[in-house]
Image (cartoon, rainbow, N blue to C red; front, side, top):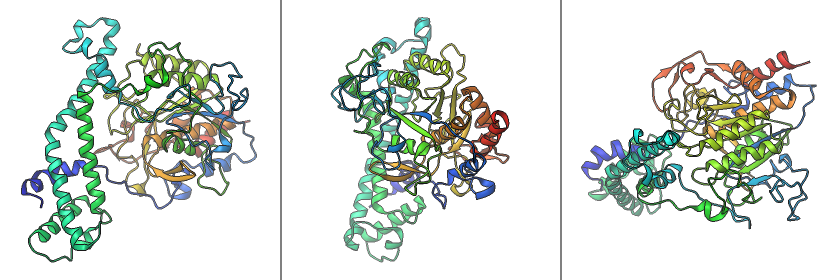
Length: 536
């Protein structure tokens, strides 16, 4: 039975928080991100119309590197577009091209051991930073810290602030939500026993007329279903959401209390603070890959027009894959070396659908970004999914170097939706003037493990949409520089002339306040402008 204080407080606050990941409204058509509003009625990228403009023109292969969690190298819609190292002989156990990475046929994995074992899970950077430098910085003020350690001190203070906020949330909510979870389970048992089935919806229990515990259980669950607002929701889904939130609170508490396990170091055995100690990892891109990297890769380059699964954006692409983002947060050194590997092996565009709130070894990444820029390589990065203004709450990596100068080869992408999804801005997307442009990131259908296909939400999806559009341009106009590419994409994007919702809230503002271009990427208009500027 749900007690009165649960109704008055928990249902209004705790339960809403636990069930806050309400599913976004879905468009009626999969692949809407490839369509164009004027021709198709969806605020997508107009890829179909872009190819119509390019009819009769020749393209050249473009190598796009994906730094991510791993990839299903055997996927039916991806295996033929994977980059293959032309200087390596597969499976001979030798470093044929002399780059230090043995049998790197389709890329490299910086998250594993030399014997092929891969890291499956990882910790968060805020916990790593907090515990590693706690002795040095705890109780100190900025005036007590040398100039060359000020940035690191700021990173530690931000980690401490985030962990303290999470810990306070645990202290305030955990006992109450634990009570709520127990009460929900007890009320569910009463009704499942009555119905003689494990799951039920609101419609299944409304007609029930019982006494005492049955009547109270019905009223409790009807009230909860009403607050969720989803008529298809079941008791088991809701209980799982509440338990998941409860477990997340406990994890947050432990994150501050416990020194994080060094999963990475146990496998890689490198000197982490030495960027020159760069030969570690393995060529296993498959084990513990998950769906994320496979999904990102498919958005960019799943084989087009093969009547299988989905269509990617680029029709003449080779996907180079670098594994540097296992479960948890990526490590700065792995990201820096992944960028350098991609550049050294011919990638012209690098997609980075990852990020974190602190970056203790940012200088390593900054140097890699500069290296990419010096070699004409465009970096495309997801803005993040915290509905935060990243001008105020940094999200790394970012284009602002430690000396306050800014990279000119770095494109940061927020997530847009469609009128059919309820808003032209995704409710989770980060925003701010450090975001360059938005791209479709809601219900993006793409490849997943074991020849699967699923639709995901996230700036992780918006970034490869933008990288794919850039790759499409690059394949037909290979001489374009990263700076020209960014200028082209920002100028040719679809203007949003109406007010749009600030992610995470109901207030509506000009799109210009959410990203510096005030636009959503548009392949059709980008190709049109590229033909005008660079076509012959």
